[in-house]
Amino acid sequence: MNELSVSQYDLVYNVFSFGIAVFGAATIFFFFGRSQVAPAYRTALTLTGLVTLIACYHYFRIFNSWNDALEVKNNVLSHTGVAFNDAYRYVDWVLTVPLLLIELILVMRLPRAETVSKATKLGFLAALMVVLGYPGEISSDAGTRWLWWGLAMIPFVIIVYDLFIGLKNSIASQPVEVRGLVNAARTVTVLSWCFYPVVFIFPMIGFTGGGAETAVQIGYTFADVIAKAVFGVMIYLIAAGKSEAEGFAPAKH
Amino acid sequence: MNELSVSQYDLVYNVFSFGIAVFGAATIFFFFGRSQVAPAYRTALTLTGLVTLIACYHYFRIFNSWNDALEVKNNVLSHTGVAFNDAYRYVDWVLTVPLLLIELILVMRLPRAETVSKATKLGFLAALMVVLGYPGEISSDAGTRWLWWGLAMIPFVIIVYDLFIGLKNSIASQPVEVRGLVNAARTVTVLSWCFYPVVFIFPMIGFTGGGAETAVQIGYTFADVIAKAVFGVMIYLIAAGKSEAEGFAPAKH
Image 1 (cartoon, rainbow over the protein chains, first blue to last red):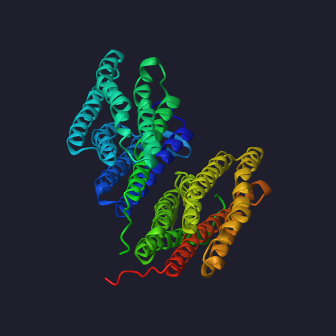
Image 2: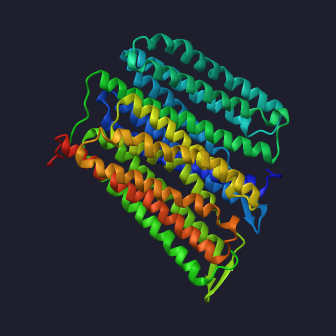
Image 3: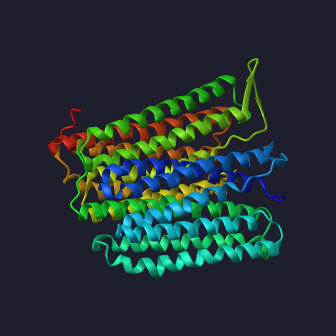
C-alpha cells in the first residue's frame, strides 16, 4: 500500500463507512420485513438480515483496521506500522456466502429433502471455496497464489454451475409472478461473484500500487453490497410476492 | 477553516450534536409508528426510520471528525492537522435521498407498476445527482466546481419537475383528508432541497472563511433535519391518516 495518495486513502475510508451504513440499514429492513411475509419465508429473511449484520460488523472492523494502519496529518499520508487486516473479508465470507446461498434456496421453498440436500451441498462448497482462497490471499508469492486460486475455483465453478443449471429447473415450480425475480437473483449472484476471483489475480498480473489497492477495496465493497444487500432486497421481494400469491396478508397487529 | 473563531467552532459542534439527538429520536419514533399504521404503510415507515438512522450514524461520524480536526484549549482554537471529512455528507445523501423519495412514493400507495417505475426512476436520479456533486465538492477550483454543479443540476431539475408535475396528478387519487399533507410533503422536499445547490456555490462566489464555514455546516444540518426528520413526520401523518380513512384500528394489546 506504499504508493497510496491521500485522496485514495480518503476514498477507501469513505467507501468502508458507506459499507457500514448500507449493511446496518439493510439488516433492520430485513428484520422488519419478516412480519410482512408469510411464516414460510421468515427464516429466509432472518438469514438475509444475519448476512448483512455479519457484514456490518466486519466493515466496522475493516474501517478501524484501515485507520489504525494509515494516518493522514497535514495532508501527508504515513504508515503507522500496524498492518491492515484484510483477513476480515475471509472471516466474513466464510460465514455469509454459505448463508446467502441458503437464503436463496429457502425462499424458493422446494420440497424439504431437496432444500436440505441443496443447502448442505452449496453451503459446504461455499465455505470450502473461501477457505481455499485464504492461503493464497495471505501469500505474496505468485505461484502460491495461483495454486490456491485454482483450488478455490473448483467449488466456485460447481456452485455457479449448480445455480445456473440446477436451480433453473426449480424455477418452473415458482409462482409466475416471481419467476423473473428468482432469475434475476441467480444472475446477480453469479455476476457479483465473478468479481472476486478476478480481483484476486490483480497482484499476480502486475496490477499493484495505490491505484490497484484502491480498486480492490472499492471493488470488493461494491461486490459485497450487491451480493448481500441488493441480493437481499430481491429475496425480500420474492418472499413478499410469493406470500401475496399464496393469499397471505400481514397481521394488522 | 482557518479563520474560525472559538464561538463559531462551539456553535457548529453543538449543532452537530443536535443532529445526532434529532435523528436518533426520530428513528425510534418512526419504528414505533409502524404498529400505529395499516400494514400497507409499514414499509414506508421502515424506510423513513432507516433514513434518520443512517443520518444519525453520519452525524456521529461528522461530529467526531470535527473534534478530531479542531481543538480548543484555554479558549484558543488550533488545528490538529487531521482533515475534517465533509465527504460523510455525500455518503449519507447517496443513501438517504433515494430512500426518502421512495418513502414518499410508497406512502401514496399507487398501483404497483407505477410505484416500481417511479421509485426506480427517482431513486436512480437522486443517487446520480449526489454522485455528480461529489467531484465538485472535493475540488477547490471554481471551474471544476461549476462543471459538476451544472451536471448534478440536471437530475436535480428532473426530480423536482417530477415531484411537482408528475406526483401532482397522483394526489387526486389520495383520500381527501391527506391531500393537503401530501402536497405539503412535496413542498417541503422541494424547498429544503433548494438549499443544497445554493450552499454548494458559496466558495465560488467568494463567500469563504469562518463565517461561511459555520453557515454551511449549520445550513446543511437544518436542511437535513427538515428533509429527513420533519419530512418523515409528514410521511407518518399521511400513513396514519390514510390508515384511519381505510378503517384500520391499531391493536389494543
